Length: 294
Ligand SMILES: Nc1ncnc2c1ncn2[C@@H]1O[C@H](COP(=O)(O)OP(=O)(O)OP(=O)(O)O)[C@@H](O)[C@H]1O
Image 1 (tube, protein in one colour):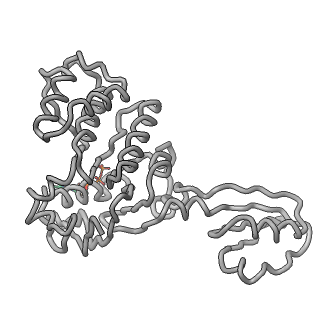
Image 2 (cartoon, protein in one colour; image 1 turned 60 degrees about the vertical axis):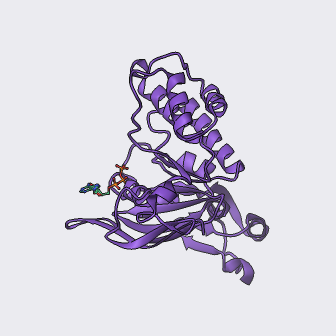
Image 3 (cartoon, rainbow, N blue to C red; image 1 turned 135 degrees about the vertical axis):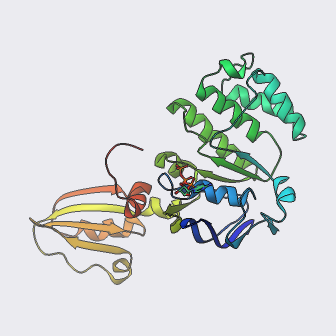
């Protein structure tokens, strides 16, 4: 595993910001971190960055201890903090040039990224909007030729069009073989770009799902006009069926849809509705919605 944590924990006095967190990330994976405010996402990222000393447990990147060998770890990664600070008096191009030099990275690559993000590089940072600064910080972060990119809420403050561009850039990073770890509150973009998602709740890792598996899951709502014949045994293992009122049946499937549809076609159905379950359902298992959008 490129990243490996083992019972990683961080306490602040009585508060357990992160508890017994164990997971691995293979090279080239895009991993999303989900959880509401205060769930421990930033704490986890800062432990991986070696900015915080674990209270117990370990975190390793490429076999290196994230805290004890943080200098060597940092050579392998680029990090976008949630509150990225840039020099306010520099303009966009000067900012890119400064950081490219600092990280021995290619300014041409920075400029290409800036163009993708439609940044006006002549403007001084202090005259940029929050979203523009965020884009500039992203271009800075994605420039160095490093195997790991860690992004703390990279699309916060960005409008939907720019979010899409950012998601594209994250995909590009993966296509270049990079490993990407990012936290977000936007379920749709996490589902869109991640290979796997970790869900945190009050400092605990409560779920780890592969997006491909989530995509395979569907909820089927049917209204029947007579009794259902038993599902074939190989199908029965991958479905969960609940009878509702008024002949309503709800089926959740974790497997392929086609065999289920074959069986359903022979059932006495009056109505049928199929919808993908999506990451939202997985997330809401742990964090029930309290209204509002992402
Ligand atoms: N330096 C600190 N001292 C005391 N408590 C802290 C400190 N840093 C974080 N915490 C607490 O640890 C918990 C986890 O915080 P963390 O910033 O990791 O959450 P998060 O999931 O990143 O939240 P957000 O989505 O708001 O960024 C919170 O309860 C927070 O108040």
